[in-house]
Image (cartoon, rainbow, N blue to C red; front, side, top):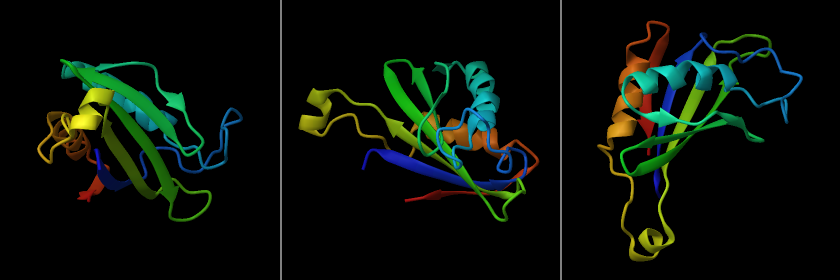
Length: 133
């Protein structure tokens, strides 16, 4: 496993309006990526433009020599409402050599994971923040 899962609950982000540009009707996370991107930039984490996947949105990120994919998606508690559970999967990118040698794995105390958790915990309408292993 080379990722960490951050879960939280919120009604701050869109889980109710399917965009015309969505690949699938479940591709929520665009506004979460747009919100998170400048907050990461404030903390010297470089990001590329977020892009849509068939399950949600992905935000490429880089700090120092480490690169990550921040994969985000959400599920509404009830159709038509924004309250629900969100998941950000922080996946650390590794070279082929690192994969073959087992080096470069994401650690439990990874700085980007900790930073994302701090950003989320500072937001008043985000709650039940936790990690899933």
